[in-house]
Image (cartoon, rainbow, N blue to C red):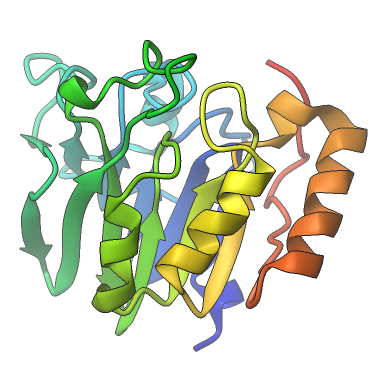
Length: 223
């Protein structure tokens, strides 16, 4: 399993996956012109501007792209081939398995950002026999413990704090999920360059199977 040949970090919470002859984009955001990949499948975790960006979607969409979106994000009247996914959603598209799982805040100070009642999601994508979990914007939630039985190979988890888990809860989430590899995301725009370097150092030191990806384009710090 060569993760580096199938999983690519655009930056922040944005990734694309290549496998089974397809390209799957998740939350395209700040997509540079150097990225020429087009989405066969596009997944949107929720409606915030740094996850549902019309400008960046336009850069990766092509005729026939299947869009799967959490409720309250992608307008079904504006785009073709849109399917709304709430937690529990499952679909197989040309052999690629997609499952939507809960993503929400539990911290009372953050619940207004990602309330559970919105039915926003993370995704588990199975491609080339590899299960990749993109957590979306979330706190450490009880449902993460259930993922241990799903055989997740790679977990992409936010650790930037403010709107999601911070580093400490991200480490606990990695333990709860028990993936073979855990990738930190959603932190450089929030922690800045020096803070991001500290997060990476601690994550590598404390998380078994930590995998630090480099962005496929110039990293950005701050919104």
